[in-house]
Amino acid sequence: MIQSQRNKYLETTVQTATPAQLLIMLCDGAIRFSRLAIEALKSKNYQEANSNLVKVQDIISEFSITLDRTSPLSDNLLRLYEYFTHRLMEANVKKSVEPAEEVLGYLVELKETWIQAAKQMNHTSAAGATYA
Picture 1 (cartoon, rainbow, N blue to C red):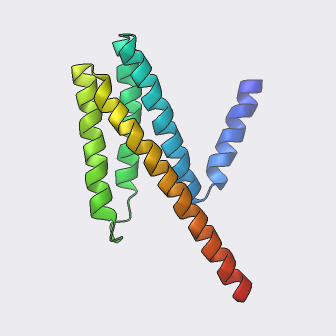
Picture 2 (spheres, rainbow, N blue to C red; picture 1 turned 180 degrees about the vertical axis):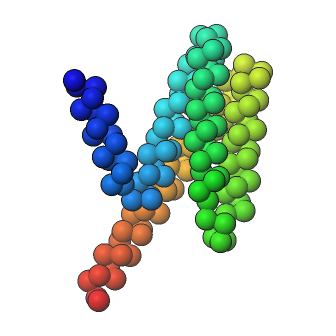
């Protein structure tokens, strides 16, 4: 019962989120799965590590797919996402924590950047609405 209510809440949250909020939610998921993968690698639970690393790669793939290719930043972001994917595959194949930790650090920074960008967009929108 409680799980069903939670799932409905999450579904509603995703359906009503702005694109910026969705991007931040995806970052949260990638960060969470990266941490789980790192812990699994450290404890030599390679099946769980693989599962979580693949989840992070899927989220990064979603970043790439939904990237606005008309943006001047798109080429750089695409290269960054490709690098993340490469490092996550390396972590998975070599059973190494270091590449996954590197990507985790970048994901945390990227999330903070998206949060600041969303705040700036909200501030700009609010200022424009005030003077309209």
